[in-house]
Length: 628
Image (cartoon, rainbow, N blue to C red):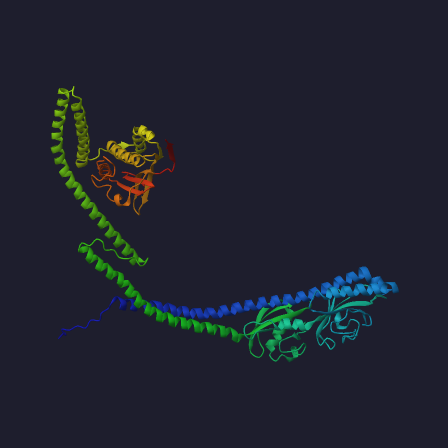
C-alpha cells in the first residue's frame, strides 16, 4: 500500500545553482591548480637559469672590462714613452733627468687616477729594479718591492700581443692580493728588452666584486683560472681550492667544462645539488661561474604550490558563498518584476523598476520599463484620440449650427449697407460686423477641416520641390520681417507618395509659426534628409524634414499642450494649426516632434515613411544647399 504522504525536498533555485555551479567551479580549479604547480616549477627553473646566465655574462663582462682597460692603458703609456721619452730614459743627461722624471710621474699619476683598481704603476729595468714609481698614498718614502717571480718575466709571460699577466700574488707591502699586468718597451740591448711597464691591479676589489654577486638566498659566484684553480670565492682564498681538492667527480667535470667551453648552464654537486651558469673572461682566459642550490628552485616552487592550494581553497569557499548571493540577487529582480506586473494589471502605469545591472536581467528590466512607458504613451494617445474624436463629432454639428445664422446675418448686413449707404455710421459698424463674420467663417472652415480630415490623396511628389514652392509663397512676408531662409536638401531623396495639398498646409503652418516666433527677424533653416534604420531582416528608410528657427521658443509648461485643439499663445490664433498638422502627418503614417528652448528657438522634425524602399538601393550622400 502506497503511503498517502510524500516527502518532497524543495529544490529551490539556490540549491539548483549550488549543485550545478560548485562542480563546474571545483573541477577546473583543481586541474588548473595542479597544472599551475607543474608550470611554476618549470617557470622558476627556466627564469632562474636565464637570470643566472645573464648575471654570469654581465659580471664576466664587467671584470673583463677592468682587465682590458688595464691592458689598453699599458699599451697607451708604452706608446707615449716610446714616442717622447725612450731616448732620454736610455741615455739620460743631467739636463733631461728632472724633465723625464716629472713627465713620467705625471703620466703614471694621470693613468693611475683613471681606475680605482690600480694600486701603482711602475717602470722596471731588466733586473726588476724600479726606475720610476709614483709615491704610494700613506707611505713616506719609496719601498722597493719585488714580486716572487724568479726571472725578469717569469710567469708573467702568459700574455698575448706583447702583454703579460701574472698569477694572483699576495703583496705584503700593500696587504692585499694583486695581479700584475706588464708590457715590455721596444727598446732593447742585444735583442733583449731593457725595460717593462707594470700595473699592479688591486685583485681584492675584483674578489669583492665577485663575492657581491648573489642569486636567490644561498647563491654565489666564483672565478677560476685556466688550470681550474679557484682565484675568487666567498669561502676560499686564491689557489686554496683546485681540481685535486674537488671531492665529487661531477664538480671536476663542471670545472673542466667551464674552462674549456664558452658560456652555458649545467648542474653539479658540491656540498649539495647545485646549478651554475658560466661565462669566460677573455682578457685573462679565466671563467666566472654563478651558482645556486637546486633546493632553492624547489623552495620557490613549494611556495607557489602552497599559494595555489590556498587560492583553490579560498575560491571554493567564495564560490559557495557567491552562488548563494547570486541566486538571491537573481531572484530579487524577478520578484520585483512580479510585483510591478501585478500593479500594472491593477492600472498603475507609473510603476518602473530601477535598472541595477547590465546583464540579461538588466536588459529584461529595461525592456519592462520600456513596455510600461509605451503603454503609458499609448494610453495618453488613446485619451487624446478620444478627445479629438469627441471634439470632431461636436464640432461638425456645432459648425453647421453656427454657419447658417452667420450667413443670414451676413446677408442682412449687406442689405443694410446697400439700403443706408449714405449713413457713415451705419457703414462703419456694418463693416466691422462683416469683418468679424468673415473671421468666424475662416475659423469655422478650419474647425470643419479639423473635424473632417479627409484621407490623403497620395501621388508621387518631389518633397524638395514642394518645400521650395511653399517657401516661395511666403517669400515677401519673410523679407518684410527680416527673416533669412536657408534650404538644405538631400539630392538623392526619391519621390514620396504623399498628398501635396495637405503637406503644403502642414509646412505653411510651421513656417507661419516660425515667422511669428521671430518678430524682430531671425534665421529659418529647412533641411531634408534620409533616416535609414537597419534591422536583422529588413531595412526601413524615412524622409525627414526639419524646420528650425532661432526665435523666442516655447515655454516648457506650454510645450506639452501645443497639439491640443484651441490651445494657442498667439493673439487671435485659433489653436488648430498644429493639431491639423499632426492629423495630416499621422494620416500619412509619419510622426511629428517638437523640441524648443525658451529664448533659443524651436525645431520641428517630421518623419515620413517611404513605401517600397529596397534595402539594396544605393543612397547617395551628396547634398544640395540653397541659400535665400
